[in-house]
Amino acid sequence: MTQDAGFQSQALLDTSQPCGQSDWQGTGGMRLPVPAHGMMLLQLGCDLAQGYGIARPMPAEQLPAWAQSFATDELCNSVAGFKWARDDLPLLVAEHDHQRWMRSLADALEDSGRAPASLTLAHSECRFGRWYYGEARQRYGKFESFQNIEATHSHLHELGHQLMHLKDENPDPELIKHCQDELEEVSKRLSDMLQFLQAEVLMDAMSGMP
Image (cartoon, rainbow, N blue to C red):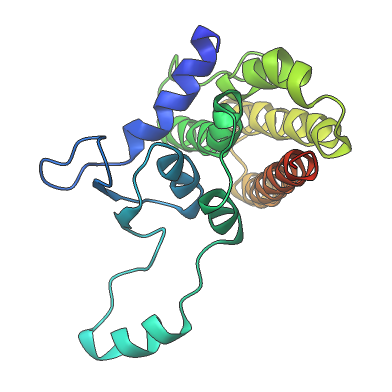
């Protein structure tokens, strides 16, 4: 695994907070922010978790009905019975990298000063882009779902450029709101495409199993 891929894998762990003094040995309990995080934690031997990725806080009287209707994420279920290759772990964290960029953009739009150094508007130079155009292309380039991600990711950054320009040069609230709504739609589409790629990679790997 390359150094940058290692950073990508570690990025997920940075967002999952240990409960008490839990370490990574055995089945330590972890706080699970979103369902996608569970995929990598399962790979690390952590099968006990809590957090918004499972459920939001609720009154005690609602717990029985929630427990009866709860269903785990489909991809998390697949991980429980399948050992992903370690080189696939950055794929499981790609959604986190995308959301991290979205938060950086939101912070920059709210700040009256200059954009933070952490916000990279060039689509090939953000953390997700470096992964996508680097080892990910070598590993997943054969998948149509992977190829389809490029245009959507590029469009996302174009909208980021446009929003930063509007903020500095033409702060028209209606125009900014329209651009932000489109950004959210494209962001959601990119997240869906990543999940589809994960499923396709999983099915491809399982089809080759004896």
